[in-house]
Amino acid sequence: MPRLSRIRQSRYLPPLVLLLWGWLLVWSSMSARLDLLLNAVFHPVVAIAGVVLMVLGAIQLRSAPRLKTPLTPLSWLVSVAVALLVLLFPPSPSFSDLAANRSEILPEAPRLSFFLPPEQRTLTEWVRLLRSQPDPDLHAGDPVRISGFVLQRPGMQPQLARLTVRCCLADATPAGLPIEWPANADPKPDEWLSIEGTMTTQTKDGLLINVVKPRTIQSIPRPERPLEP
Amino acid sequence: MTRFATGWAIFQGLLIEALPFLLLGVSIAGLARWLVPQSTWIKRLPRHPLLAPVVGALLGFALPACECGNVPVARRLLASGAPLGTGFGFLFAAPVLNPIVLASTWAAFPDKTWLLWGRPIGAFLIAIALSALLGLLPESRLLASALLEERRLSQPLSRVGLLERRSGLVGVDFNASERRLEEVPLRPAELLQHSTREFLSLLTLLVFGCALAAAVQTWLPRSWLLALGSGPTVSVLALMLLALVVSVCSSVDAFLALGFAAQVTPGALLAFLLLGPVVDLKLAGLFTVLLSTRAIAITAVAASLLVLLIGQWVNLVLL
Image (cartoon, rainbow over all chains, first blue to last red; front, side, top):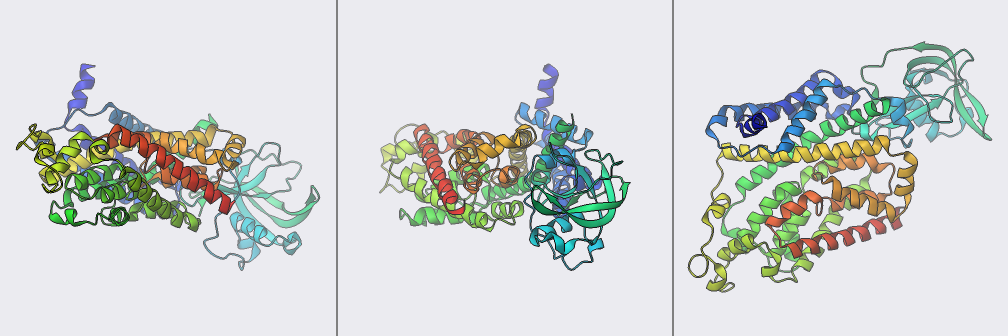
């Protein structure tokens, strides 16, 4: 306890905490951790904030011996512990788990993708297209080349899906396509797959829907930027 | 374990996203505290019951700060003799009516245009209503005693008698050491130290808020959220309660609201964004430097009722 009091009385503690948080933001930007957490628009903002925090921390570290510092609140030490935990344990979310608990209201497309040749459309672009043009027969027979993770919702067939984010992982919205899995396929939740095949139609619960019929299914590593805008 | 890993990632996403906005808010609050002039223009602000809070609310654009940052600025205004309406208009509206908060709301909800208008308009109406309501109380029962003493020093003798001033001329000696903190302009090094302490204190609250939001998103079953979030009144009340508990700064609360946005009614979403900047657990402590206990209670009850009404009205229109 006396040691804790000495730490809390140290005039170097506040600038060091500032430096730690600044380093956390800079490190998150450099280590591509942000690709898993935020929309790319915000990456520079985070990096700049990290640099600013580090500069402010360094300035205060220099002037610390000349300033009187009140006792540091215990809660700041909690924030130090949290910063260290964030640095030590990088994010490793289960996209399938995350998506299973979300609604599927996709944000507006950042650009029009309807004029792209079918084989160049990403999975998210396919989902947006199918929702905006609800006649499934229009796309039957189109070639499909997509990649995504296996989304397993309780009581439903596995789909191939991607997550879109406007801001951060907290608002991630899944976009999933039904797949006609071959008999020998064993898709596991969160497994990343690349699928080439054809768009077909099927009747499900009395409704005609589009389903991807794979020609080839290939297991792939998670992409560097798995989130889509 | 998988679910914990997902919750941990959501927590990191929320925290890292919100940190730059918190830094910006605290930096500007620090600058505002440094720059708020001690000149006579403050005393020349309009005293009209409607105009005063409007001017106070619009001051948020000149002195943008979140609700924690603007408490010291509002105190400075009132202590310098600004009209009560202006001080309260600034206190209650500026946490929303400022470029940083509007920018963070836009960043979080670029597709919800109605929210980008609804939030500032709602905050503006609440600030005017609260200012009018608090204006019904006499100053002696409205303001915290230390602030009241400072304020009376700034009032002309035509308004406040010598006996009420407690300035050392007549009555009890004024506590000079407390006054010095507010009166003497801070040196840059002190300002930096002050802002650092503010940033680190708010950061702890932000960590707590993000942890709560991530936990709710990860472990609360979607069916519960949908059941709670789809009721036009229940959802508003639930998100108001959440705003009270989470106590997150207005410059970053939009990012937290984003986590619940898909599961709750539009009125509940707006209620979360309107109530937090005016009333929350963290502010209850901060307000004691400004208001008497009775005035804090009146503010909390009135703001909650107004937000509930606005939330329900929005649900009536948009649902």
